[in-house]
Image 1 (cartoon, rainbow, N blue to C red):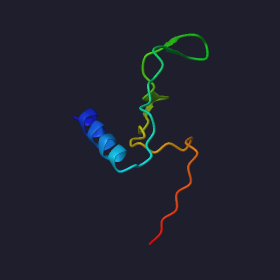
Image 2 (image 1 turned 90 degrees about the vertical axis):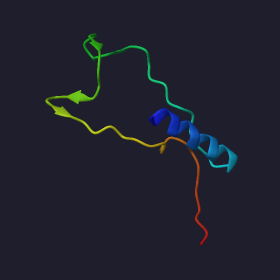
Image 3 (image 1 turned 45 degrees about the vertical axis):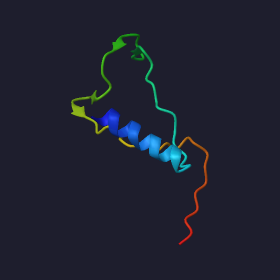
Length: 68
């Protein structure tokens, strides 16, 4: 499953001293701007949005340098 793969990758990243973000946890309940309970965010205005996958997080301040 995806959760098992993610867990195994995070263990290997930890052992190799690779920086990785904490697992994101969604809020329990979300509401629309007009106060209605939001059930799903994947369907917006008659189109299905692609969900971003992976562990990349642009909000983690870290500089990377690749040395060949």
